[in-house]
Image (tube, rainbow over all chains, first blue to last red; front, side, top):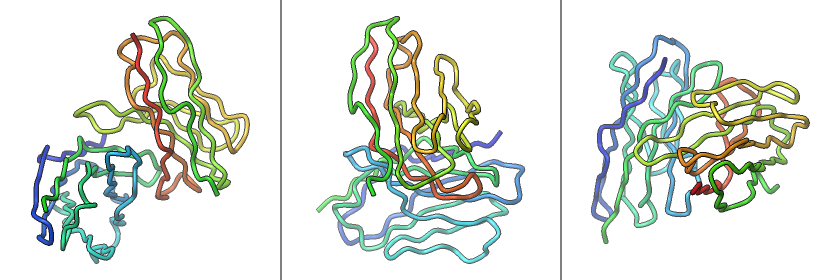
Amino acid sequence: AQTVTQSQPEMSVQEAETVTLSCTYDTSENNYYLFWYKQPPSRQMILVIRQEAYKQQNATENRFSVNFQKAAKSFSLKISDSQLGDTAMYFCAFSPSYGKLTFGQGTILTVHP
Amino acid sequence: NAGVTQTPKFQVLKTGQSMTLQCAQDMNHEYMSWYRQDPGMGLRLIHYSVGAGITDQGEVPNGYNVSRSTTEDFPLRLLSAAPSQTSVYFCASSYSLNQETQYFGPGTRLLVL
């Protein structure tokens, strides 16, 4: 069975600074997808970024980028130029080739003005 | 497009009562799933469906039933509610089972007394 671990229950950052959220996973699959979802206080789950395991290039979406280390089974999220609207719970998630997401426990990120 | 919709937004039940959580999507997605979110545990898969007439169990299926008579709808039934089922429930859908980004509904908060 796959497991996803987020070792940072809470993080905080000053507005305009950079923060990195950690995620590790365990799987015997070779082909899979990794995701970061954001959950603001509204509870809506919002996709932030996704990474295909077969791609060596790290995914980027505007201020969000990942550091994907397949051998180490690590998938961290870097948020640059943090904004107040980035305050949310962030979930790392794993999906093998046959679907079905497995989520980490989540990291609460607070951006301070 | 309304995306993924869920009703009700909030429900209080007494132990032993039954109810159905509704989920609908208007994106013609084949794959639909139900998750529950509990504090400190991320989201866990309850049941999923790869198309009309086909359902399967996820990680935590006990106490829940599902059916998929149409592509659009995927209701989740609690036959005899228990306090352990107090949680926030999310429905999600994607175009297909394989590696697709899942889109989440707004969630239903359920309190079982």
